[in-house]
Length: 244
Image (cartoon, rainbow, N blue to C red; front, side, top):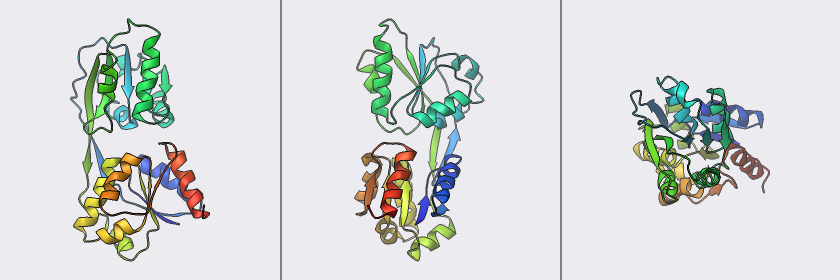
């Protein structure tokens, strides 16, 4: 299949390599650019644990002056990939949730249940967030400080080669890993007067929420992964390629 990967670097490279190994032709259009907020205020603490819903948060605090102190705290990651990134970054006590914010909240909730006296949590987050993790935990009586450590900047146009491929009907499917990148895809398609071609292809999404802006723009061929992780999305594409 001829596929388009829209996620930002460096994650896009891993996804592209996995697709190429499976025999697909792959184009890239990183429709989001991650910008670190270098002077992010992390709050006074002390914190009982760190919570992250994206590996981008870990990259954002890699050079933060308080990173060493944070790495000594327990860390709860949204999924296995983010947990692996946390271990690589030097965090020693890492717990991976099942892949989405709801399961991340449940994971933290179960940990907190073991000790009602656990202190406040530090949530390292992006400026735009999927789901209200802090609100879900606060509803249980947990004190959560949300520190915005990065923002995702939407690109305003497709790379020329990608625009040409869409115009010529040479893209069989597009992978969407976040709602914001799906929104950027639609915006770029509109700016290039390619909205009809952009929505006509197959769209592979990590979750139903990510698919919403695509459906609103007129996309009909949408497939949702059974789990919100890259492996499930790749399996979904594989099944589609086999005609399942």
